[in-house]
Image (tube, rainbow, N blue to C red; front, side):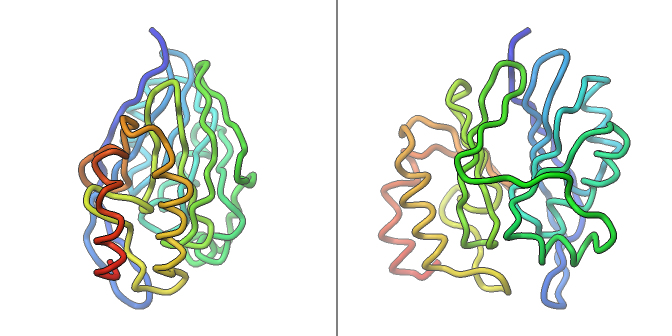
Amino acid sequence: MGARIEHLVTSGTFALDGGEWDVDNNVWIVGDDTEAVVIDAAHDAAAIEAALGGRTLRAVICTHAHNDHIDAAPALADAANAPILLHPDDLPLWEQTHPHRAPDAELADGQELEVAGVRLTVLHTPGHAPGAVCLYAPELGTVFTGDTLFQGGPGATGRSFSHFPTIIDSIRDRLLTLPPETTVATGHGDSTTIGAEAPQLDDWIARGH
């Protein structure tokens, strides 16, 4: 069977700036019957490993380094002997959660990763976090946006390491230029499409949301 996208929801805690919130996270698995990558290893390494079902894990890709997106990354990577990939601008956030375990390799804007014959292009989209990235898979008609773009608006920018004008620029310049039919696979909640979100840009700016 060819490359496909699988979806797992895990639950845990998001902690930043002294606060804690219960959250459900989307974990995305992209691959075929023999190999896969995991996008955002959240909360439950055992559940993600079970969903892989013995396939070779090529990489654990982090869209950003808020703890709820990376807390299970070292355990999953170590169990599967796979590298953890993170944009270097998010190392200060990563070190808050994993001070004694560095990522294995860096993500860079424009970098292409390949799994099961599918290309994932790294788009650096700072704003929610300095090293936030999205991963565009044109063959699958999907962009994995982490917490940069959700159904109904951009990711939160009210906490440290975040900046609203920057996330707006990232969404306008890097995401809304993708084909309108592109599925937006988000870090939390329901998926959407580029075409559904693009007309709302001016409203988001006006609301400062």
